[in-house]
Length: 162
Image (tube, rainbow, N blue to C red):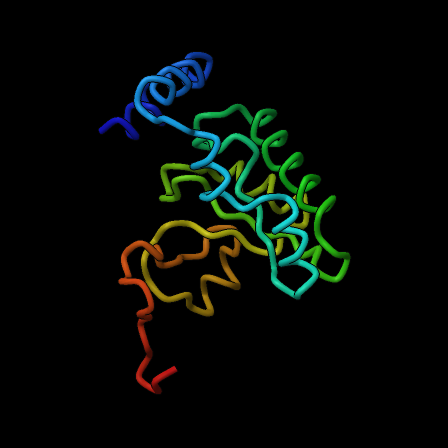
């Protein structure tokens, strides 16, 4: 409920202040938690150097459909620039995963903006396998499974066991 209120019902001009106040009141040692929870720029660079594809997720993690086109362009552009500054040239494939996911969290305009930045594909939170039609018809809204739905160490295998 708190997440829903913060993401959909509080104006973005007040959201950061509310989050800051909640953290101050309820989460001791927040810096230590953030350092152990989030990937650092050095870790992003190391993963890229070892061949991992690193995708964008925006700058401030907003619900993209709540933003103006200009704000969406800024979120996408700055996030791609940030990753380009850390990743190796051979790994500079642009991909995106919508914050919060779901078709309500982005718009046709968001998909067009991603296309304009030569984003190869983007992930939506629609829990199903990707089809050929998804890739060919709507690459900026590919389905994906939420890793939180699986127990640690388990994966869904297809009929061939892969």
